[in-house]
Image 1 (cartoon, rainbow, N blue to C red):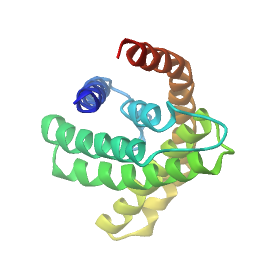
Image 2: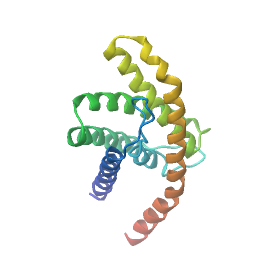
Image 3: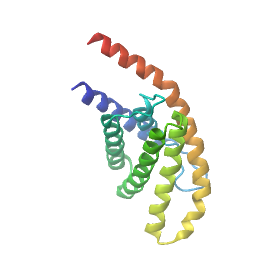
Amino acid sequence: MKRTVELGFFLALALILSYVEALIPFSFGIPGIKLGLPNLIVVLLLCRNHSGDGSLGRHDIQAALGVNILRIVLSGFLFSNLYTIWYALSGALLSFAAMLIGRRMRCFSVVGVSVLGGVFHNIGQILVAMAVVETIYVGYYVPFLIAAGTVTGAALGIVAMELIPYLKRHEADRERRQ
């Protein structure tokens, strides 16, 4: 029951961040560049138990993936459309796989895992865009999207790194009260 409440809280935070991101007029003239604020929640769920051994429980993986997918579907229906959901899901699944691999490799910090997420989210979306418009010329955006994913991923990773100690302290307090 407590885990369900916790995951509901993280999902609500991710939806709020999706809404905030939808309100921010952030554009550099290149389609697809966003801040990726909701990805902060996925990074926190994957890395909050960050230790040098790279251990990550099955429940942590399921929680991060579940919150990510539910957030995309719900925010897509609330704030955008079906096409946005498909683009976001493609980016999110590739991003999640990259972050999970990076997390398990033990050589990436929280910031590194977040950068992987930002870069691979953009790559996933560009691959879908190539399929939808049936041309590889959309691939010309890749260097710009990789740069944007690196910058936004690093920024979100730094925020996550700062928040993780508070999450750990909260979890320790909760365990002491039980």
